[in-house]
Length: 243
Image (cartoon, helix red, strand yellow):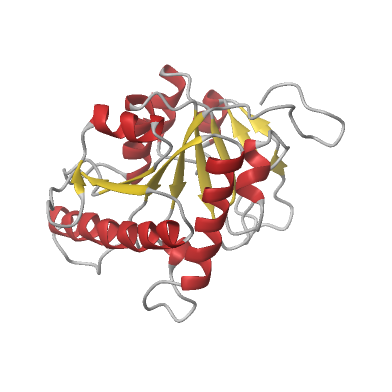
């Protein structure tokens, strides 16, 4: 992430445009129903901070919520998930705009009454004007993972990194599942090839290969730990850098 000072902070943001990938589960209320407004407000506050105070262009990719019930047709389940990302994207937009940050939701599944259609050049123009852009609706096609879509959007808008926000206390890439293996160790940095060869669950193999081919680094970190978004974009040693 560039040369850092003794406290781990770089003299300036290592990247000027990023895609922040949020999982659907990260925003879910502890009851399992609806969205957690406290988490929405926390994330909105941190996004506004780095956009307005660090000058970093932020595009947010909303991942799918939990998988549909077993037995449902895969394509149908994927379409339901795409629509859910639009609803969650609108909720995050509301939180951001209440915090004073102009925001646009763009969706690959066209819903002209509530969001813009995804248009690459328009998304870039919004970012150049200081707006946050929330991508939703996947690619508009079933069978594409949220990882692959995030990587695709990052390449399309010339983002310099993907920040993959985890939750439930997982703060990076480990040698094994830290919830099941107490001896699992966290990597500070790891290469794309090592992730693929070791079968680590950072992103699916298609997304990892795409990022490697397009030289897009990935930072895996705990997005729910307060201040982590800013810490990553200040170049501090937070989470795991895949590159």
